[in-house]
Image (tube, rainbow over all chains, first blue to last red; front, side, top):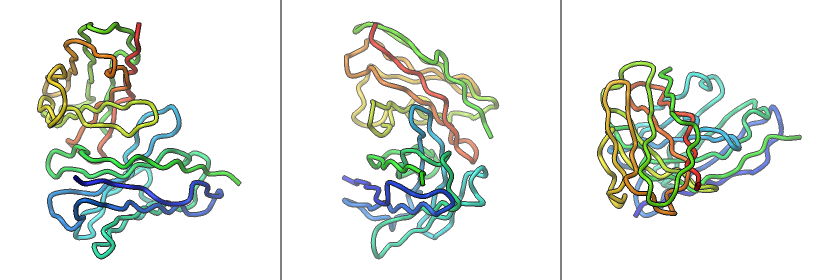
Length: 120
Length: 107
């Protein structure tokens, strides 16, 4: 079965760039049946969708973050990535990657999440 | 953005109780509503998609209903492992948005 695993630094300094990768195992990112998404959850709060990337490289971002976010997909490494620039403390959260089903838009497989803290 | 409002925000119940959680959308979203369960320290788990379609492996005590703007998640008889936080999500328009969550606690 498909499994997702986030990786990246747990601590990022203010104004720097947050970079995370989601490694996919037990399946391939090279499928037209899914989007590959990023979601975040500040401590004790709700879920915020960051955006998604498709196998074609097409991306869709949350307008609230679009000026700072970039996503990509690498079929040779079977992973997809997130970059968020100019981070502040408000970007501190648990970051999840997830597989999103085309058409229905539900996220049927999630990574376990990785905590990112923005602090000097 | 479409706003999803869940009620109640928290709920205390006992094992064996029947409970319902409501999710109201700020505009019509057809049946493009998803329910997730999140246990502390864990990633969300999808329970229901398309407002009423139970995901594979999810116990039949969970059910979803609704269309348009008003949706419900019902648990027919609470098990101990059901005490968690529940979120709804709309997939009707981008950006996809989530409700604020309903925390289900043991009475």
